[in-house]
Image (tube, rainbow, N blue to C red; front, side, top):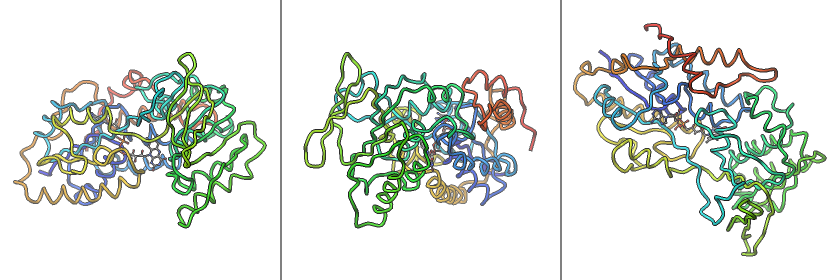
Length: 416
Ligand SMILES: Cc1cc2nc3c(=O)[nH]c(=O)nc-3n(C[C@H](O)[C@H](O)[C@H](O)COP(=O)(O)OP(=O)(O)OC[C@H]3O[C@@H](n4cnc5c(N)ncnc54)[C@H](O)[C@@H]3O)c2cc1C
């Protein structure tokens, strides 16, 4: 009998790991488990809906289930007791469960009404089953952060409805954006433009927007080629003029407080590089300053029954960690691939030093468990979403877990 591996989490980390394992050892029994009824983690719920090219990585992941024999067990939340069962049942268990708590600024006023965090907003915009309702926006938005997620949000808030054609943005979110009162967005970075975290290509994409007027305030210069790429990308926005939505890029501003009026955000107070105070009035303060272990770390430690050492890829014999769960919430989809290849080699090497295979229950532990979504079940959800796509959209995501389960749970996986 072949060895068995349970991977908890079907985001890029889990899927790339399954790919690497099955490429090296096609006989392995590789099972991917997710708490959601649908696979692919942040590819589905983080990557922007107008970046379908990036989402197309799921076609590679589909091959795992359609050709390479991996199995999907959706709608299964792994907690500490289930983790213990899986560790008994499989030769290796890998935690690839991601991390996605919004990082907090740690400044006074950040819990006022009108302060919105990027993770909360993207989950609501992208129809995550556990998302809160879409928040109310004002006319003047300050968007704190200079990473790619901040640029995604800037682009979505700035696009005209026509410019969202071909995306998978749902009808409620589309309506919310089309009716948004936003007139002005000031995007603020702590560092100088040359040290911003965004990719130059993401900024250049903004030059295609038809409804905006962009002003880049003091981008500065750089001796480094990488820094100059970013400054040149910002310079390419100089011709983006005449549209009704005003966008201003500002750099080297550290937020020190969110000012409120009657419990609602009214301005953000910053300190500039020379120590002078700058106040930017706004009625919405959107923070996209990255993600942190935060509450997720508690979830992670509870799952493991002990504090987690983020440097460790190997947690105990037969128990491994991958992707954002291991490294913290930083890095792109391709970075998980590189990571996965190293981990797959390590797991296979460990198998070489273990007693003979064959005694473990493997996927039999799921027999009789109610409401599991198989890959065939996910294909039903997928087909229903694509069939329900409205004009100018490539799919209409189902946000309700109950609706997904209704479509999926009675579908048996064909036996491999
Ligand atoms: C808003 C946003 C936009 C992004 N856009 C891009 C982009 O355009 N391009 C790019 O290259 N990178 C992008 N990234 C980064 C990319 O999404 C990450 O590098 C990648 O998703 C991390 O992969 P992961 O598998 O570790 O985590 P995730 O993708 O988060 O997957 C974790 C999976 O584990 C599941 N899970 C969690 N807990 C449990 C549990 N207890 N039991 C079972 N399952 C569980 C989750 O449901 C999820 O499916 C973006 C990130 C964010 C947050």
